[in-house]
Image (cartoon, rainbow, N blue to C red; front, side, top):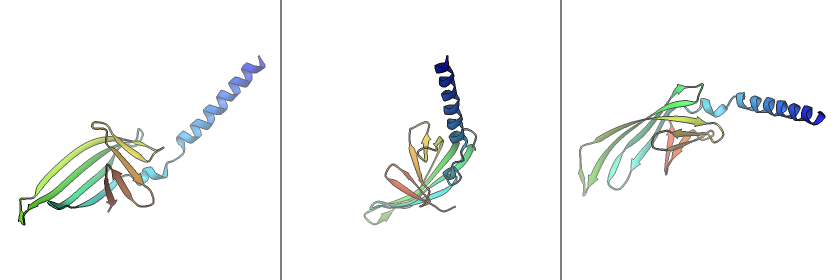
Amino acid sequence: MKQMQFLYAMVIVAMGMSSCSYFKEDKAIHLVPGIYVKDINQEFARGKDTIEVKTLDQTVGSYTIIRRTKYQQQIDGKHFKPRYEIEREVAIYNPATNQLLEQNKGKVYTFSEGNAVVLTGGSEYKKVK
């Protein structure tokens, strides 16, 4: 009987500790929304790549990511018409890793608190707003 009481007490303490850490405010979550920019300076193209992160539902940690790309191809000194692309994605924030996990294609966006940058794939975007 004493063993059962001890077991129940341990379960209650564990639940209390986990709920405290669950509701502990994540400082990085306030840094996530914003506009991030990367310059495209390649041999055959120049342009800008912009990621805009907006809060969709803060209670579940969901975000909308809008990626806008403008680039102009250049081959043998000839410049072609600028091209524009827009992608819209929904992602869920994981506070343990400071990452947004995109739900459709599986992209991962990693946020760095100190540097105000987001990393995805091999690209680094700097926060401008």
